[in-house]
Image 1 (cartoon, rainbow, N blue to C red):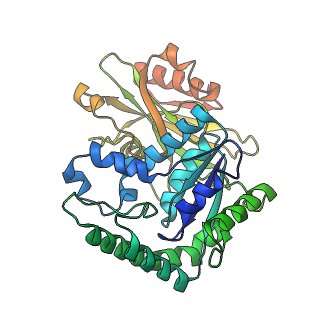
Image 2: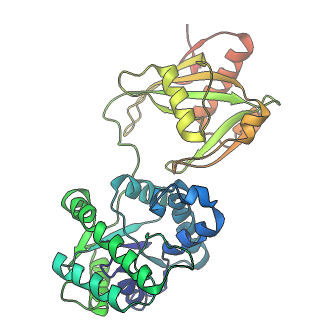
Image 3: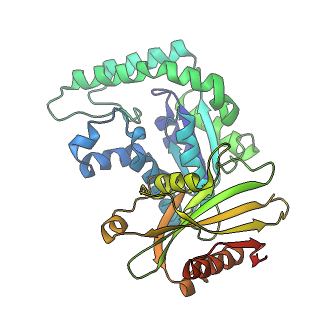
Length: 363
C-alpha cells in the first residue's frame, strides 16, 4: 500500500511523511524528489533545459511508478510518498500505473490556510541555507548559486504554484483526496491525523485509473508488426493481465486503420508510413461486465531493423514489448486473443481478409 501525501509546495508534506513512518508499522519513506535528483545526473543538460519541472519529463513519471513498485517488492509494508501532484493527467498516469500493479494508493492532501502557507514559505526561505527538501519538483541550479539565491528561487517556485494548487483543489483534487487541514497542526499532529484517516478508512483506496469503462459495444484496432525473422510484436499493458497487440479503441469519427496507426505511435513511438492492410474482423460477444464489439487486426508490415531498435514505451500504459513466434504467443496471449492472432496470420499467408465471430471464421 502507498500513502500519497499531496498538497501545495511548502505545505509540510515531507516533514509530515517523516513523522508518519514512525506511526505506521512497517512503513518506508520514498520521496520522488530523489528520482528527480538522479535524472540530473542521467539526462543530457539539453533535455533538462527543455523543462522547468521534473514532472513534465515522461521518464520521471515512469520511474516514480517503477521505483515505488520496486521498493514495495523489496521491503513490503507501506510506502509513504510526499509529492505534489497538481495536474490530473499526471495523477492519472502515476496512480494508474501503480493500481495496475495491484498497489493500493491512499491519497491525502494537506490543506493549510493560504495565509499560513505563504507565511511558512517566507519563514523557511529566510532561515534555510539551502533549498528546502520539501520543494519537491523545484529544479536545482549549479554550485555557483549562493544560499540566499537558492532560498529566493525556491520561495518564488513555491509562491508561483499556489494558484495552480488552488485550481486543482477546487476541481479534481478535492474529490480525489482526503483533506487534512494542517493550518494549526504541527507535523507530528498532522501525521497522527493522516494515520487516523488511513486506519479508519476515511482515506479510501483510489480506484484503478485507466480508460473509462465502455458503456456499450466498442470497435478496437490492433496492428501486427513483424521483424526480419517474421516474428511479430506484442506489448505488455500495465492496466490488464496478458499481453496484447499494439492498438486500442477507435475513437468516435475515427477510421479504424487510422486508429491503429495512432495507437502504434502513442504506445511505442513508431510512426507508420502507410495505412496498414486489414487482415480480419472479429466480433467479440458480450460477456458481462464486458460489452464486446468489433475487433480488427491490421498488417503493419515488416519493420526495418533500425526501426525495431528504436522502439520506445513513451507512456505508462505499457511495461514491456517483445517480438515472438506464434508458438511463444500461446503462452502470453489470453485464449481469445491467441485465436484471433492465429487466424490473422493465416489471412496474411493467404493474402485475404477473414470474417470471424467469437474467434471462429464464418462466411
